[in-house]
Image 1 (spheres, rainbow, N blue to C red):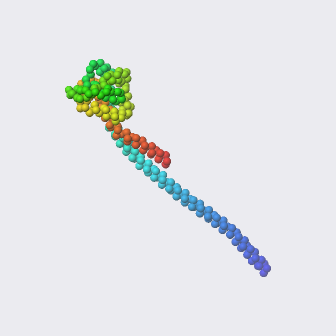
Image 2: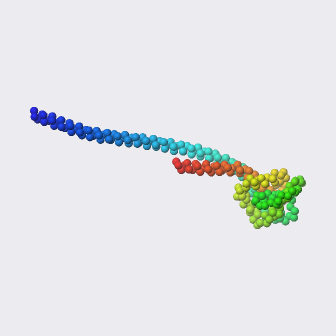
Image 3: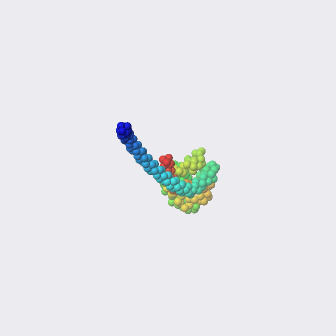
Length: 251
């Protein structure tokens, strides 16, 4: 009997001890559960953030692709507009190539050049931003037509032609100077070019140089008018390409 009581007492003690152990393990389990829940919440937040970032990247990528298509279309438009201006450049270059130093020398020797020659050289002075004579009323004759005009500035033109690099200056203007022309220059040129008799055909009857230069100055006017359409597009295109490059770097 005593042995049985001892076992019961010892069993009760073991149960109490087990309760203490289980209580301690329960605390650990609750702490582990809490830690696990926090970790899962953190993973859910990270997943949501990753999803949001992924959506943002996808949005930027989509906008970049749309911008790339738009810019490609604008480039095509600019190329088409530039193609319209190019024939005037080609025409001007061909005109200058047709003029030889001897042709200029012939004009310099003329005691009294025809009025079409004088007007052509007025236009070259205007292109080069060189001074013209003070405006004085005068009459000129072109293609057997008398026109109320003003005194040409041929003496100034002779000084210009006296330079050793006159033809090279014309070539250089055709290469780079044409893009520096402003509306005021074209307005002055138009006064001459709009005259019905101011044509290469009329100038050809006076001299080869006059024909070439008449073609040249007319081509410069038409080039400027065509390039005015292109330049704003090219500037806007450069800005758009810069923005797209920045967006691509952000991806």
